[in-house]
Image (cartoon, rainbow, N blue to C red; front, top):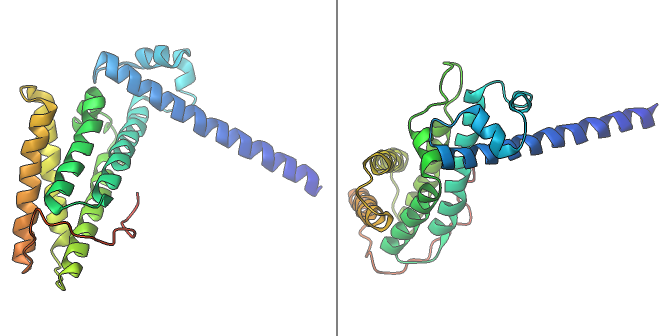
Length: 230
C-alpha cells in the first residue's frame, strides 16, 4: 500500500514540477512578446511566442492579468539578481551607488516594454490581487535599509530612519524610471548618471542627519553577507 502511495506522490510531484516549468516558459514567452509588441501585447502574441495554441495558456493562467502578474514578478527578479551583487561589490560608496544604479537600468533597458507594462500596473484588474511591484519595492527597500544600517554600524551610529529613507529612494528611482521610459530623450548612460547623483545625494544627506560623514571616494569594507534576500 505504501508503495502505491509513494508512486502516486511521485507522479503528483512530477506533475507539479511540470506545471511550474510550463508557467516559467510562458512567462519568458510573454516577455519576448512584450519586447516585440509593446505593453499592449495580446494573449495571441504570447501564445505565438511560446509556440502553443492560446487555450494552452489558460490551462496555467486564469487570464492575462494573472500572466502579467507573473511577468512583473519575473521583472523584479531580474532587477534583484543584478542589483544585489552590485550592492555587495567592494567599492567606495559613491562608486557602489553608481554600480547599483547602472545594474538596475541595465535590466530596464534590456526589457523596456516589460517595465512599461509593470510601471503602468496593467495587471491590477482585480482589487484582491496583490501588487507584485509593491512587494518587490518593499523587498528592495529592505535591502537598501540593510546597507544603510551597515554603514551606520561601521561608524558606531544607529537610526530608526533607515527604512523610510530606503523607501523614499526606491520611490524616487521608480518615478525616474517611468519618466525615462515615457520621455525617451535621455540615453541609458545619461539616466544612470542623473539617478546616481540623486541616490548619492539622498544617501549622503540621510547619513549626515544620523551624524555620519562618509568620504564618497574612500573604500569602505562592509559586512554585507547578511543582506536580505527576496
